[in-house]
Length: 424
Image (tube, rainbow, N blue to C red; front, side, top):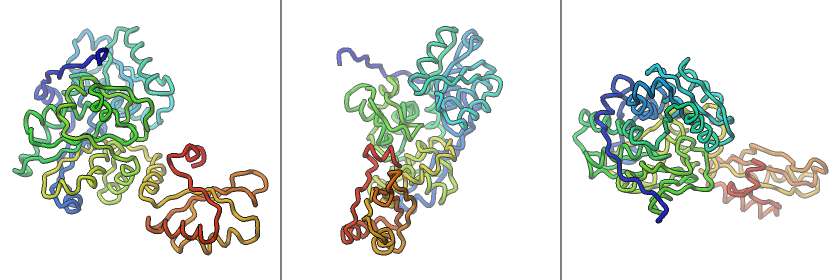
């Protein structure tokens, strides 16, 4: 610990940030959700940052920091590194402030995100695709910033960024007065780098200290949880990047200095559960949420007993969900729900073995969604990759029982196995 630099909790002017942002950002609604409230027997309100101008809260922090730069700094221009929401908030801020901005994005960034960034920034931003990973991109962006004497606008680790994100909390508490006299018992907040949670935590700690703040991270990227356990931010070696808006290897220093005291509890949400929630929100509520934006709702099942009869706020942090990802989202959801399974099956080298598998092993509602022989030659004797979709997770036990009864030579491919990544 001796070589770790810990940051003091920064002083934030959140009311000042709210005033700066009022003419620029959308005051997003705090909506009572009847279906979720009925399901969990409580009062659930959704803070709809997916309805923000750039479809996420990130605009708040970017504009708040940039609007406080000196005329000399603005004249030299600003730089950011981002593969998603921060880039779009940054670009919109550049256009609003008439400032030249340069956005560095990883080369593999989806074209949709690149196009959105250009659309929000128009002629005020230049997009540079550099590096295969975000770390490569950020390094190049910071080097460019120094070389050209510009100002770097970080995605989360700066007091002005935290101030801007905290205005979400200002709106929540102001709007709640018009909806109910009940205090907020729980607020569920997604965490990536920690800017949003730090801002909300700071403000709620001052204004409504009895509210329990539940910090949420994807199961595959628990960087804030790791920091709290270690007592300081650490860099994770490997993370699952699926929840792109909340998957970072290391949380911000300033953010941690606030979150370590403000957060009541950290909770990890499985990526598959997040996918199920995305589909449910679309089908049942006609709300399009990105993976990070779904976390606050996805976590409710795990708190069903604690939140009964309480007043709950869930931060829906963004709605930038690329439609091209929907097949993967459905696949992850089905696997998590126990409805999708993959097997390597060595069919017996005799006529009718495949027909027997279909007629006797599979249940009446089991569906073959994928079938391919693995080896190119002598297919009749080689293993086959078989994907099965079930109507109910209880059908899995029947399926495995039939496999054993009819002596099917099979190996199930677990999603955590290396072979899963190669074949599925």
